[in-house]
Length: 268
Image 1: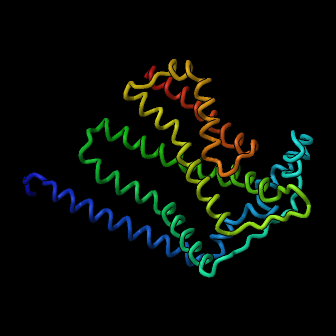
Image 2 (image 1 turned 180 degrees about the vertical axis):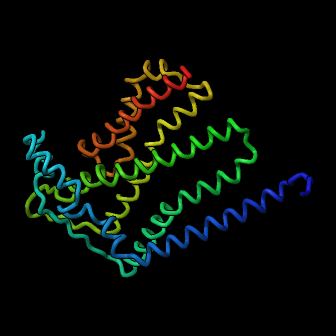
Image 3 (image 1 turned 90 degrees about the horizontal axis):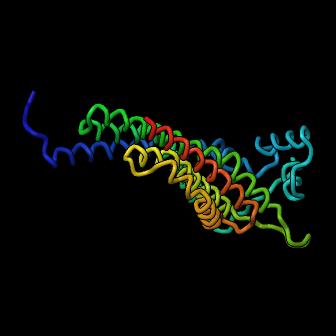
């Protein structure tokens, strides 16, 4: 075995090979997702129909526990026969959207391999205790991001789409929603919620670095709630109060979870 020191260019070669492998695997998953067009878009377009699992579950909840607050919310969860038709207005748009959705699906499917390769690259430079924290960080970040994606898919986006897709200022003003608008809102909300769900992980990192204390977070809770409402108003694709609450309440709960995590971490 050679004892020659590893140079910067050696590290660069290793990184290049890792990037190539990541690109190839992501491309393979993207091509596979592209080939399975019908199952892929059955998932992506699921919330446009009243048979979607979220609508069915909340309809059952309404039957069990009575009507929900607000007339609009009641109508939204009670009617399970709704369907919002999507249209396409550009010649190549459906094909382009197909490629984009397949690309993002491929990235999500390949993400465990991507994280493994990146961790494999940096782990030799870490001490044993640092490697343990790195594993916890990578795993926790991935789990929280996936939870954010799932929360957006099953809760945030369906209610946002159903409320706005069926909302009318007058009976003679029909909604005409494009596929591009649907996909754009779907992807943006999914990514935003995935990133927002990283809040407990970032709090844990700052607590480990002794840069964040639970008492400080508790002291400024009211300020953070106001900031959350402002941030939710910025990142939501619409200006209605219903969507604002759907985004801001989970953010507030994540903040409370972050306080608990910081408190436990500081005691440790």
